Amino acid sequence: MKPTKYIISFLVIALAAFMIGCYDSNKKKMLPLLDVAGYGKPDTGKSTGNTNTGNNSGTGSTVADNNGNTGGTTDNNAGSGGSGSQYVNDQNSSGDDFNYNTSKPIDVSLTVKDADSMAPISQVIISVYNEKDELISGAVTNAAGVSDFSIAPDIVNKGIVITVKHDGYGEFQIPIANEQELAKIERYIMLRKIPVEVKPLDSDGDGVADADDEFKNDARYVKAVKGEYTLAFEDKFFQKGEADFNDAVIKLTFEERINAQNKVAYVKVTAVALASGAGYHNQFAINILGKKYVLINDLKDDLKKPFTEKKDKKNDKCVPGVEHSAEIVLDVPVDRDTLGPMPYDPFLIPEGGKLENRAEEIHLSFVESVYKAKGNKVLDNDGFPWALVVPGNWCWPYESVDIRTAYPQFQTWYTSQGKSAQDWYLHPNTDEVYCNCAESSGLANYIIGVGRSNKMVLIGGLVLVMISIGGVFIVKKIKRK
Image (cartoon, rainbow, N blue to C red; front, side):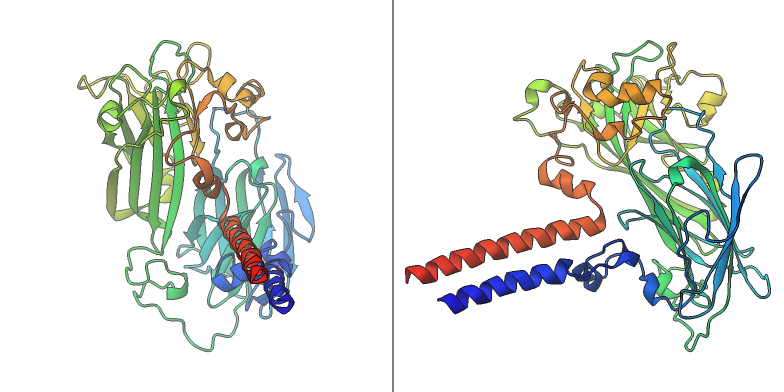
């Protein structure tokens, strides 16, 4: 009996040691089990090319101009082949442009050149990871060796890593610890060639190796960039609303596909109604590249109930509406700044599901829309918005509950002009918000909220618990015999 008990205990301890016994600083404490499963960024310690382990200020000299921008160079030969350096010309955010945007985009401009010939390096694969090792954006350099795009990292992130990779030059990583303080990330990167014994496979002939091509059999696309948001509206336009932001709550997801020249060749946007606390029959649409796409004709038709009443908290789980999608295939791909950052220009048409050709529209206040450019209002007389957007999933206030009551930190964020409580939307008063939705409740919500690596840690932990319980049960059963 005792040997069996010891064997089971040893197996549990061995599995735990396998998962947490090693520390890999280059993978931000990524666990060995996850490494075997193929999760996480490429290991810089095993790079076959260029590696940079400095922060955004660089390990070399640093200078600042009169505008507060910083510049410097770094040179680090930590990789097993070649070397790389970068010149930093980041631009700090002014901090005085508060516009109710919870996920402020940061412009990125990377120029990659051969360190010896100064020739531009095209079709360099660029990947941007957040602190959870989640891929949040991607890009490719064009024929001039330039890649311009924008990222909207979650406000709670504590840093990002930009990975620059080319089969002929290896890999170069740029950790940036203070991205939320920046208006623009601008880097000039110099790489040296490394020996390439075998030319990598490129099945679709777009110039990007299959290993780095998400669409290896389709030359139209190289990478997919995705985004997920929740939009919340007050529909008493032009009047001041009751600020419960549940008249229309919509889940909005995006997929952009970029080609080997870093141009957008395909866009898919999907909208799902979550709540409709309004008396109006509201319509939801979005403007993309100058064209209007009506995604939800009438939110009330999509939902069985409003899903905003407090009395439903315990018993009534909300049922999201059906998915409505628009797919746009661009025969002539466009620059990414032409399309603009997600979530583009989504808007609500009050009573639009009942009355045709409604002129009133409710837009996000920070989007430079055509509607706004015509002088139409996007804020009420007190400077308060009718529309908000938050990244990912969100619990919305109950009917007639002011958002400042449902989310106590909202007032701090609002009055500080966005300088404080930037993650207000993560801290609800749970007695005042509707969170009983299939997409955002219980364990599912927890798993949705954690990063890719943390999901695996959670699963691993659950496996360990199950093994431990099973071991104890077996030992007790043997003892009884």
